[in-house]
Length: 305
Image (cartoon, rainbow, N blue to C red; front, side, top):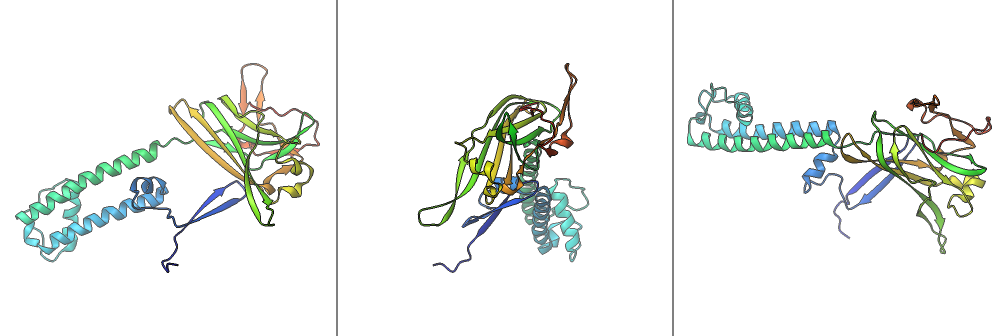
């Protein structure tokens, strides 16, 4: 076996109350052979640190080239690396204030190369900043906890989602996948991914809230969970939603993960949408995660609102 250090990459699936750590061996998070993906997956602070580092590094290299031959630049003090650096900054930006200028062929060649690199650098960074700003975001608000409650005398798993945008989303589609811990014939435990059948998996018009529902009947992978809360231990659940944002003219995507212990048994979501009986509905997004006891006077929770 090679003694070379094994590369490890860890990602985290987060929920409002927990997170799930996933680790890969032999891959790296930031691959410099794929600079576009590298630049887009950096956080904004990391992106600006990388941008400033690259900018300073380019200027430092050219400052050293000018410093190595002070006579190649008019009015460049012979022992001033700082002046060489600032001349590099002005050249990279194609400003050219005029006090210092290339005076020899060496100086012209170095300045020409730097101007060319400066134009490429500016164009590349402008494109990357634009792409990062223009990436569509779903702005969906997921309830912090799923609930299992009675709906029409049947136990139902529910997860409420709110549309955090001012405008309505369209052609929304939901999918819930659970990871169940099972034991094989050899006694070893493993995780099995199962998609849950939803009461409604698509929603053509998504203006306010949507309660994604799965009936826990005898054929449901969660049937044992409806009988015993202990059956939820070790389970992971992932809810993903895709929709079209008409204002962006693009498809948006969001996902949320939950542990089995996040599920609120015998609870239901408190009303978050009020309707005046006419054409006005008001959704309080602050109540998306609010739950109440299922022992309260019964009311049928809306599947969509």
